[in-house]
Amino acid sequence: MKINLGAGDDIRQGFINHDIVQLPGIDVVHDLNVYPWPWPDASIDELVAKDLLEHLDDFMVAMEEIYRVLKPGGVVKITVPYWNSVSCHGDPTHRRGFHELTFRFFDPGSPLCKERHYYSAARFMIIKEVFVISPFAPYFQLPGLRLVKIKSRIAKRIIGLIANTFSNVIHDLELELKKV
Image (cartoon, rainbow, N blue to C red; front, side):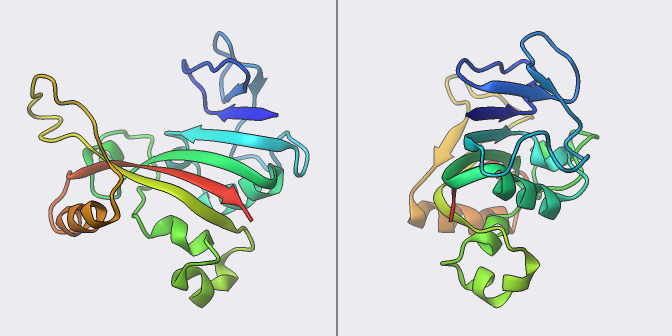
């Protein structure tokens, strides 16, 4: 089973499309701030949470719930706004932003997870981490230059340093996590 959480207008074929409101193409209506979510334990192979986690009241509980509903080896694909970007602060419904270290607290191979293992029992291996930048947005749109995805480890270290010094460099983080 595949779930597209907070689908909105992004209806995906082959997925159960979820949202908090009944929109065209939505299969399941549920407020994700109400637990448990309406899927059984270990029942989902793939979960998409694009532009969703920043809207929820309790990020840690949501990650625990994602862990609960995913099958062992199941994958969650996440897109979230970077902590100091216009993507984070421009939307008045956002509750929080995210840093590139945030999801490492769930990765058992990370020193952060080992050091703070008591934060959560949810464990996800980080399969993919991408920084999404949009140079000069939202103030200037350069023709032909939209979103740029930074995947290289070295480039991410350089861009991360710059982004933590100056606001609005990284707009979003895209992650793929695998349930351990």
